[in-house]
Structures are given as structure tokens and as C-alpha cells.
Picture 1: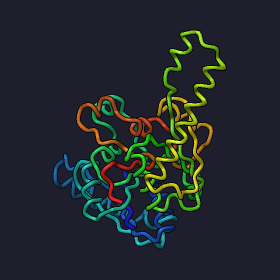
Picture 2: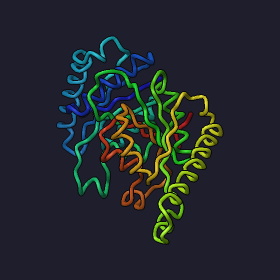
Picture 3: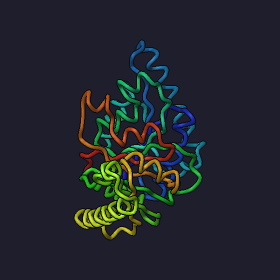
Length: 286
């Protein structure tokens, strides 16, 4: 396995390096640390910053306990951060990219997206965004599914990366009961509405079980949960209750202006949820 961890030498990316080191040690994987130098400046400044970055990467490998003793390769790339990270990942056939949560810039993020969102949006590698401090290995994982190939592939990627081994896994599906609002407006008694919702929940639970069987995921030792509500609201509410260490999500194949302006459930999670997130692009190989 080959893990690529990106750093901008901030506290946020320091967490990502520690988590990447922890994962690399557990999987006996090779680990590359990459820092990107902006090339939109005079060449002599690019050269100076490149040399300084190489020195700082070497110091990090010595200073961060999770990195000591690993097959660790420091790298400095030049260019736009998201493009340089993807080029480096492709050149080394990385199995996983690990990044820290980036500081948000509202107007820029609305129209362009943060670096990590752009890496997820345009790349083909699973991306782990590290939000929280690294105190121990992941122990609990939440994986929302919407019965799409993308959500099934995300769970498979997490399994292949060893992120589900020995962990408590919960698979979540959010549903909105058909005609519940109309039934309420029509004046039906609450017990009748509750019976309708219960019946639909049972039907959706059966569909979830069939989905896992169809995608060769039934052997996972996972708890299944079907919650009433739209996808993001169900995910957010479950995170508040479960407090998982890791959220595993797939991304869909939308692109262009529609995706930038409307976003997706995964991108909304990347922007607003305070949990480590593994985002798996739809085109990921398994």
C-alpha cells in the first residue's frame, strides 16, 4: 500500500501527518509526505521555498513520533496545490491521499471549493480528511448509503484500506416516508401515520439488506440503521448521537458548474461536519 500525505506545515496538516503515519504503520505501507510550493512567483523565490520546504519535511519526519521508523519519502511539488497533489498521487499510484481540514474562505469556497474538495472532485483516489486530534486508531465507523454504486464502492474502499478491520461499523440509510405530509394534512390519525412510517421503514430495511448482499458486503459485521430524514440531516443527527471516529462516503459523478454551485452530500459533509471523513470518488479502482 502507498499513502500520500499532503502538508502545508499548519496545525491542521500536522494532524493529517500523524494519522497517515499511524495508518502506514498498521498496514506496513510506504508513506510519502508532499508539500506544494506555489509557482506563481519569481523562479528564485520558488527555488528558495523549495529548499526550505525540503528542510522542514526532513525535520517533520524526525520530530513526529508516528513517522519515525517508517518508509517515509519527503517530496516537494511545484504548482497549484490541488493539481500538484493529484499529479504526485498519480505518479506514485497512491492508494490513499491524507489531508488536513483547510481553513474556509467563504466566497472562494462557494465558487471554487477548498483544496481538499477539488482533490475529491477531480481525482480518482480515496481522500481522508483529518479533522480531529490523533489519540488512537479508528474504533467506530459510520457509512451512509443511498443504494448507489458510489456508496457501495466507498465501503469497499474502506475495507480494502483496512479501515474497517476490528472496528465497530454502522451502515446508515436516511429515508423520507412517502406521502407522510399529505396524510397529516388530510387529517389522518397519528397512529395510522405511525403505522405507515413503520411499514415503510421495514421495507427500506429489507432493501438495505438486499443492497449489501448484491454488493458483496453482507459479510461485514455491521449494525444497520434506517433513519427518517433527508440524507445529510440523517447523517448529521447520527454523528451527534454515535460520535464515530470516521465517516465513509462516496461521491457521485457530477461535474462542472452544477456541482460547484449545488454541491453534494459528501461535499456538504466535508465543509461542515467535525469528524474525519474518507471520501471515495466514484471512479476509484478496487
